[in-house]
Image 1: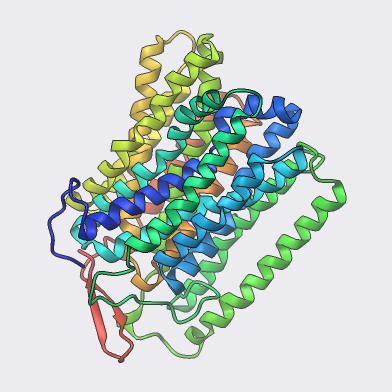
Image 2: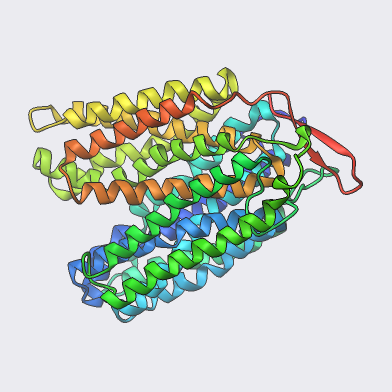
Length: 488
């Protein structure tokens, strides 16, 4: 950690790391959602049917669930500097592939591969946690998450303008290709200008790469249970792509995917056992223990917060258009108020967490989240449009502040496992998005918002079991000495 003051207008030391990291995250989201604002032009250029357009949207998030877990492991093992730089460079390739696609199959493969860039978020969580002390960590992580997350909104506002500037049927190709160039260039900038830790600090690595470490028998079984929803979400995505959904996959291919998911789950269980079988042989020293329930609670909360944000951002323009009979352009501008809140809300949630405690802040924000979505369920055509926008923005504040507060707590559980914990929690956000969007396809808007409110209530109850991070967490240096890292 460094002792320098927290000053956003400085570009040196820890603040330089923060600024470069949120920029890297911003670019990953810019690339991840670079197709969304130009879907009509892309569909026209490639001759895509409506079902094929929906399939591209599904494929864009399909790989992100396992990718966040994998990237979290790689970050803990090799360090955020090299992993972030490689992710930005490697993912520019499918970005160029998508820009050059001539048919649906090529576009679908590129979009599926681009889901991996959505995992970039977890890398910066570990990087920021290495540079900022506990009393500033929530604010720093909130700025990283909130400003970086704005990349998706930036794509919506800037890329159509870039496409128009190039003009013609291929304008969208230049716009998307430009984001690939930006990703590739910034990979070199990031690598040349950051380090994993401040000078003299130790980067603690996990003992094993294959699975998340736990420190008790009960937590071993708890970890296995918490793996199941991630595989269930991937099975749900497979179902959406099967003949029962958009028919991209044949019945046989879908069946093979289901079997593959079961085999992958069993394979992962063997790694979980290999990494953690020692807890059945002898107790872990108390100083090195952590409680996996802390991770599980944060998973549930991110399911409700980021999961609902991804789902609501996808449907809100259509909701406003249909409810208030607005044109698509006006509805999109009105709905963008929800995403714009990210710039201040997520840092705000982290700051509140630093000032008033992790658990108490999460309790208040989760309660506000439940109330906010309940109010959204009441919105109908009898409401003034301005009041509906105010309700959406208020709800958005609690959603995004909650995200900031969740990741203010994640780095305070176990330092050497921060990437893996962030990866699992981040993956649960995508699991939430898949779940909520599936619910939306089956029910009306009011019920959709009520379902999110109900899961927020579940999150509130789960929060009661969470313990406020306090004291220190212990890590072992290479020479065998124990280092205590302050968490409160």
